[in-house]
Image (cartoon, rainbow, N blue to C red; front, side, top):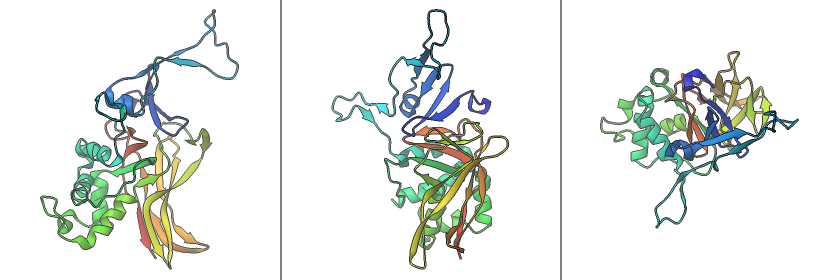
Length: 275
């Protein structure tokens, strides 16, 4: 396990859902939410040795819970699969280190401007307070006071698209990347030196629409990093990507397991500029 994460190790399962483990106990999203764990015990022969030549086999004490179980007799389903938007909101509410990001998120959410499709796999990057200050200073993000009032009411709707683009550029679509401390980026049980995915943000240039893209990789210390990619058409750069962020190893801030997703607190921000 990783000391900064209270000794937990992290991985993704066959379906791409994230799981954390410690002391022979496994927890998926539903287990974390309800405070339960799946106990695993290695299968050994009569002499206490591993009888298998191609790996180890474990038996589980119960099935994993991908979602919180619903015991309400009137409920149609026996589980409660939390939507992505309230999951992120709950995270932001409880993490003071990303309170600046939360102010923007809260105002957008109050005006029903956020659109985060469910039933998708996400890695969600949340820039910390210092990163938000730097983004405002660089003009990448409007200052909060120039966009909304102290009560969270948007006062300059012309800046909505800029704020939304900033947030959507930090929603990586289709893959869950755990900060697992290993050397490679592992996706579908294959080890990669890096792996590129799209975000939720689109840019249209010359009547051509493309999603912005982000590449995940590990540095020499096996820390998880993400860098913004250019959007190109042949040798022409249509949208310039800039910025590299690193996951901050904070137990209450990163490797937060959600419904088909994970949240990481990061030390910077990603930006895209149309040429």
